[in-house]
Length: 56
Ligand SMILES: [Zn+2]
Image 1 (tube, helix red, strand yellow):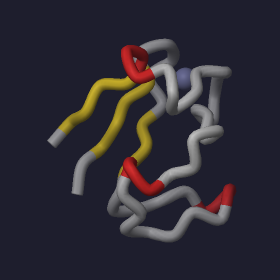
Image 2: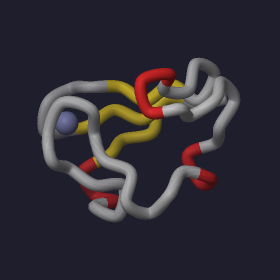
Image 3: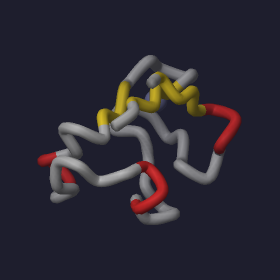
Image 4: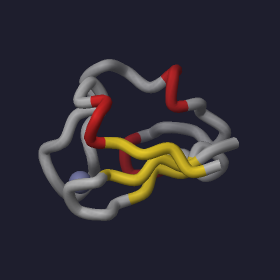
């Protein structure tokens, strides 16, 4: 399980936790998130790959 931090605002997506607010179950891998997944706090999209840093 890894975490991905939004380099724009610092929000973190944690694969182990998922995102209950958006019905993403715990354990959902980053690769499995929909392409239109966005940061919870700003407009950075998953497809903006250079805006996300993986943390192992
Ligand atoms: Zn953000």
